[in-house]
Image (cartoon, rainbow, N blue to C red; front, side, top):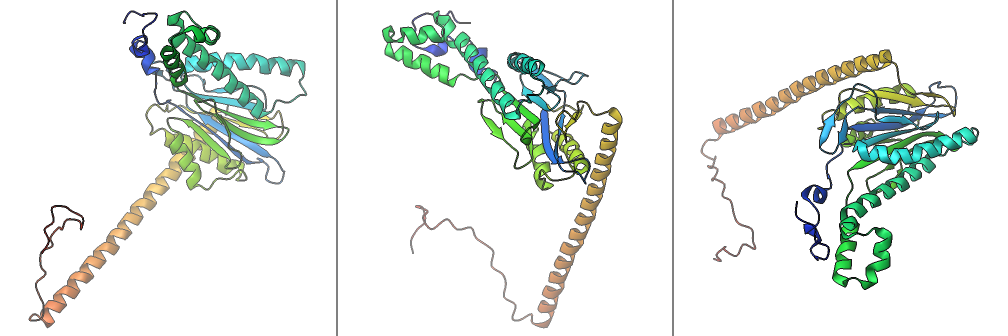
Length: 347
């Protein structure tokens, strides 16, 4: 590591390679949440179903523990799921969870809003991000964010610009979170991204984060999912989306699932192994049927193309037999340059 020099203007020389990279890695794992209708079709109300793998990342380490670790129930009505660096996630969650528990203990009838916990997580993440930026950029100068603001008038203007730029461009390890569940206003899903932006996914009725998010999202899009699909259909779809996401690098094969609702306080924090086994059987059965349908379709389109080729050959042979003298030879094709080609010669 290069020796840190207090007043050099080239800040790149102050940061070791590992800090300059800032652990910019695509978050492994996949976490999925979906809104659906009441498990009892004749009763009103919405529910939330969720699924996650167990793959963890910490710095440059990836591993898959044999215990659930991505799903955290903040209450009997709200659940969080987390992707990315587990060290940073743990730091942020430890700022949020005690506040949630304290209010529940003091005011058990005062139900938390899903959006409030999502916003609290975003603010806690911003604080952790700022602390990391201070340690990487300001600490080598003997500064923190407050002393930097206080002393910048007496500092070299170019140095101040470089420090401000480094602070603005600093990236913490990649993390994302989903907060989902029920509150007094209904069923909700929120995503908090790596920039601490909070987005609501209630209208589409599903959300996914992590390396396998696109595979999961596409499964819901192809299924035309809405928040008013049945619980059974959404449960199988969520499991299938998680299995499809396993093709993405870093997504683990173990699966944990939960459900929330339809009433406040109703939740199944961990679906039983026999439920997951049945879902897996139905998923494999469905995949087998789709594979058989694909094979049948491929055979049919093959026959169709062969028929066109055969018919074209027969017509050509018939034409050559009936009028050989009128058949002109087909000139070979020639590749021509575009009209604006400067090398093209004019006649």
